[in-house]
Image (cartoon, rainbow, N blue to C red; front, side, top):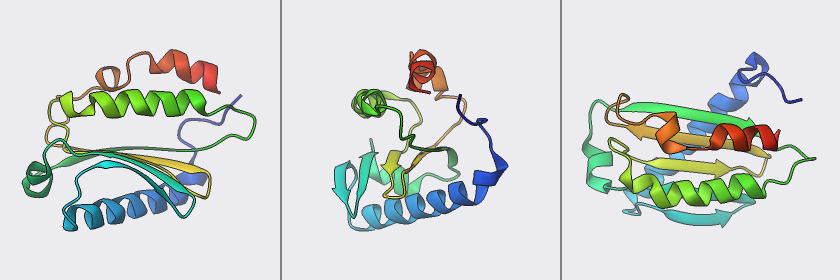
Length: 138
């Protein structure tokens, strides 16, 4: 059985992941790169930016983040497949400014979704079928 969804003992790790994601996203935007998938320094990155100008200029913006740790006894192939599906659909989500997921070298996962309007992008629209996959995962 996995740990509780919101484990206060992980809050500092999650906040550090968010800071790294934010800094990496800002560096990509400053360099004019909107999206893609890349690896480096033991990390894997997936980034979708449907409209770079909207990401830079949208104010106010809201954010949703998810964090977790890989589990040694689990095949992460299902999660990677889900990421691929999500990255392919992300440009179609109303209000989405960016979708950024990172698998860090520390075995931590971090995801950030800056949004124009939190009422327009729901979890079910973003990850249909994810609850069933999550049960199989952990």
